[in-house]
Image (cartoon, rainbow, N blue to C red; front, side, top):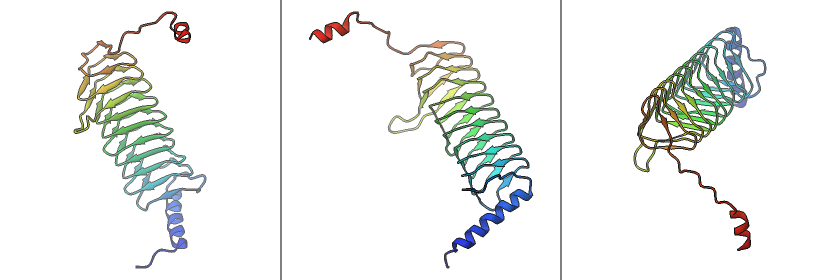
Length: 228
């Protein structure tokens, strides 16, 4: 079998782009756009430069995909914004706003109207309708309910060195900034975790969990330290 020439590859690429254009997809600039044959894209969706669609990809209507987004073997709903996103073997629901710099790893199911902000990673997890994970957060091996708010720097601690465990966060919970959720653990419906907490026990619904050392101020410490 002979290798395909650069010309053959280019012609195949342009044929697929032309097919999408004929189906009502807007591709304003072809730079870096690669779309595998058989990809389904809904009418009115926009594909921006640097977008790569590999394998079995289905994208709904009215989406904006890119720039610099890679989608592989995944299903994207209607009216979704993916800005500089890596999404593999996962599902994204209608109305989601995701990016920039988001990594959705395999076996993830992102519900409708979910927001995943900059530097968020999701792996083998479900995130339900209306939840917000705004920035600098890892959600791995987790089941997250509706309308949950994640503060900056949250980590679901899913691996103990030998086994993976799951975290469950129920509807309307509020996860404070820099919270570590050490799986297996459940945060109940409407519960809060205080910023800076490391949560190792289940949190009952509507409770506030505080798991951090009490602050101690050493008066005059600077001057004493300098004198030494």
